[in-house]
Length: 261
Image (cartoon, rainbow, N blue to C red; front, side, top):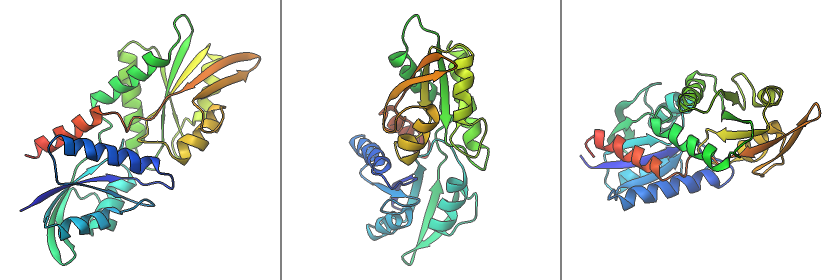
């Protein structure tokens, strides 16, 4: 069988998500993998299905799909196997007919539980925090109807706490509680002079450029600002998402090595 690698992303109406996946695909190619393709679950092009069809046209009949997601959820457990490969919900292995060819498909898991994520987040804190200030940290997740995103956000908050960053708050953009807009006032009431907001997201997009800033109390498309509550001023520093970090390519390589690639 001829094996190809397909990095699967969420997709976005903005270009950021595609840009991040293209960068990580190029990094894999630089590491010696010349069989790397990129596809998206929705909105961006090509779709995962279209990328798989291109792979079949190039002679591949064995596809390893690497979901470039922080956490599992409906996209990974339902959309990718069912919509793109006609496999059962929650499937991780199976045979799919693509362009008249029987193709073996393996779907890996997202990387949110990798210890490296906490290291990346800790570096963001060190880069942004001001010595001598009462600095509080919040990890922000998308939220999901399933528990995966919530679990990953709480896991990384616990890891940052174990690394010595005090109480690490969590907040979600939608679906899960507590909501970001409810946590920020609590942090200020708890004495925060400075808040470092860490988005546990792959890339910029509508959520991180418009939705989340409004919930933080800062300007859209900004990297921070001053929030006032009950006469107290607090500086919010808004970190960049994690998806472009080159060390995530190492995570992908390790997944591939475990699969014999």
